[in-house]
Image (tube, rainbow over all chains, first blue to last red; front, top):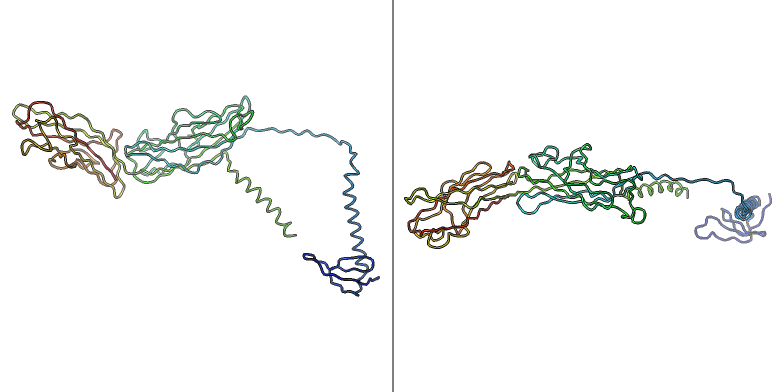
Length: 236
Length: 180
């Protein structure tokens, strides 16, 4: 095997793993440190150069290929199509609302929430809505109760105002318990969409205010009571 | 380098999941509705109450006032009261007076009656212009149980002093309810 003599050696630069050394025909990087005067097996050096040359040529070919292939032929066409489905989403649903009353004259407890929503309904035949129902009633042990109120007429009712897409609920519906008792908050018509510009012309996100009222029945025992409401938006 | 290549797919997955959660959108959402029910009380008073005397032998003037109330007191430590006070004495002058009766012993007095949750006052109570007088009291966890409210009645007696000049006289009695 041919060997070449190291003429000059130098230490690896910061971060490099290789030492360098120079022999008469050129420079090469090696893993082991060689000192001036050492004999390096030429096979290793030669192969390294061969790989460098091969890789270098390959890279050059790849770089030049787009230049060389500029004159291209259309191989075919593809049609892209998109079908937008009806959709609806609720955003940032308030996690809680506190009902309060003022004074000491048994006026109804009141509170309000604002719902953010977006919707898209099918043109001509579509529709959508936001509904609400009590998924968990008050504890009903001496306090308010939606399902079985202590006095006939006690109720958690709501009104809807300011819907920026669709129609507010009318009157003061009473919240019911369970999905079967869901009440409509907003009715969304056919061909509706959310968006500030054309063709929607409403807002980037639509909103509606829901205002609750709970009967203040003297029968309620003092204490804190909690119910959980579930909101649902649907669009077709 | 190998470690980086191994962690990149996991990192991408985390970023994708974070993006979807951060948008906070859903077809459904829930809201907790909370209410703090506190002690409360309210009343209405039938007005006016006419005091009349039967016969012509200076029998005392009598009459009654119906007080309708709604009350809720705290469950364990609550209480409540209904009281009254003559906030405007009889006028015009020359007739009866609660604050300065023309004859010692002339007085406007009352008795109380009513059902639970109230405990009516006992005996004949003197009405006063200077301080309130008891009508009913309530204990802990007291509740009005009907939509029409609960009631107490004050039955009045006013001395028919011959010193009184003839004429029409009126006073104002203020009823107050409290609950805790």
